[in-house]
Image (cartoon, rainbow, N blue to C red; front, side, top):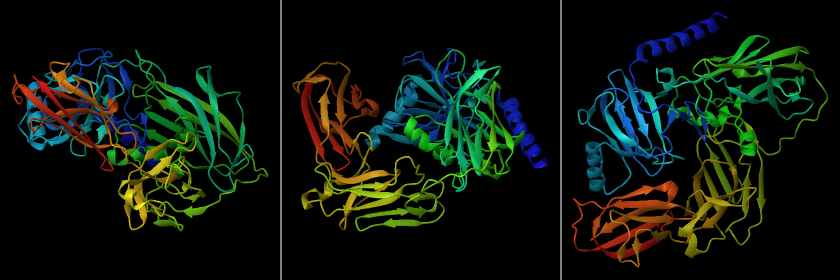
Amino acid sequence: MRIRFLISFLLTASVALTQTTDREYFRSPVDIPILLSGSFGELRSNHFHSGIDIKTQGKTGLPIYAAASGEVSRIYVSPSGFGLALYLDHPNGKTTVYGHLLNFREDIQAYVRNIQYERESFAVDLAVPKGTFWVEKGQQIALGGNSGSSGGPHLHFEIRNTESQNPVNPLLFKFPVTDKMNPKILSAGIYPLSDDAHVAGTSSERVIETVYYDGAYHLKGNPTFSVYGDIGFGLQVLDYLDGSWSKCGIYEIKLAIDGVPVYTFLMNELSFAETRFLNSHIDYNHYRQHYRRLHKSWVDPGNKLNNYPLLVNRGVVNLSDGQLHEITYEIKDTYGNASKLAFRVQSKKVNFTPQEKPGVLIRHDQQENFETASLKAHFMPGTFYADFNLDYDIKPANNLYYSPLYQLHNDRTPVHNSYLLKLKADGVPDSLKSKSLIAVIDEKSGKKWSMGGNYEDGWVMARVRQMGTFAISVDTVPPSIHPLSIVNKNRLTEQNSIRFKINDDFSGIDSYRGEIDGQWVLFEYDAKNNLITYRIDKERLQLGKNHVLRLVVTDNKGNETNYQATFFR
């Protein structure tokens, strides 16, 4: 009890210190009301969201301001991810990050462009020397945009600890965000976790919807499930903030059994090195089948996430005593709005037939090699989050692939670190070996995606980060180039830019190079829209003459497409 009290005291003191020290330090990075479309710690694909997403009124071009005085420490430009992003280091030991920008302040933009031309690369990640750019609190530093992997115009904003680069929850600071809405609890899960465990007489989990009345959430129909053995619980929960119906993440989850706390999840800070442990934090199997993310309230042996300030027996509860037990959840958002869920389970041992676990035992903390005559998979320690029995099947080859179809377990089992997968390439003709790769095939639709890979010594091999159905395929089709600003390869239809759609439908775009009159020119790449754009640079392009433009696009298997045009500008 003393240990739990100390943990709680230190946690409360840490939050209070953060709030009293820094809450007045930052201003809003925008001059419009802050409405959020995403929150810190929100559950995303393979990661926790590392900041807050501020709506920019559905448009690009809104001014973005420095949240505090500091200097530019990093400039990031990428066709995906944060797109155009700016990092400011501040004297208080914090770094602010501004992502998905349209462009930077004029002097910063010129600095970046010169380096892009020096390196002949659109994508750059620049560590800016100290003293290069100092900005004052409230000074405009950029325009808001929709660059990178953004799904719509918004500003991705982070506050990080400069030394560790760990992002901290921006809503712990005094930003003008209004939130008077309680979190929503949508469903709860009860999971048998030991060989002898069962829920409602079966060895399968039960996920039950909730209803709200009398100021709290309840399981729909108020059932009392019989349980036995080691049991885990889970919760589907989300949060809304005032002025927006965007579904946001939760700040704190507490689980108690008969009034005794056994589990706490808290989103004060994140580590990028740990963010993929999200796939262990959630019920990944349920997510893959139903596209709903449930927070598990127990921790797998291989889950190293440090966002559990209180854990008793990793959150696993043994309910083998034949007694009635009260299960209580308390959920909070960053502003203290709270919701509760309570239900009962009855410990009762019943006769049941456990599910068979066919396959080969794979231990999460040891090196494991699974090999057949035509498939090899090498798993290092830490590839998986828990031990499991790997199921395997092989289906005959068809005319779409150059090998049989190998079912290596299923895509509902999460993979943390990539592993080496090798498939025997006896069916690949010599002329196609350099174009071969490993494809993963969706079990339901049959659609395939490239996992990459290369031919070597009779095998096609690749490092992959999922389980599922694999086969050898080839890519011999070059990328496509569709001009949007040039007609008949000689006439510009836009005065100030030249745009192309580039696309590769299998192995993906590896590189592109645009030249005018034999000199490299900067084509900005918007990967989500397959769009590249050259903005006429009057300082670098001699005007009033005919020019020769050449564009070369190459995919990940070396297939290449060339486009050439002559235009006057």
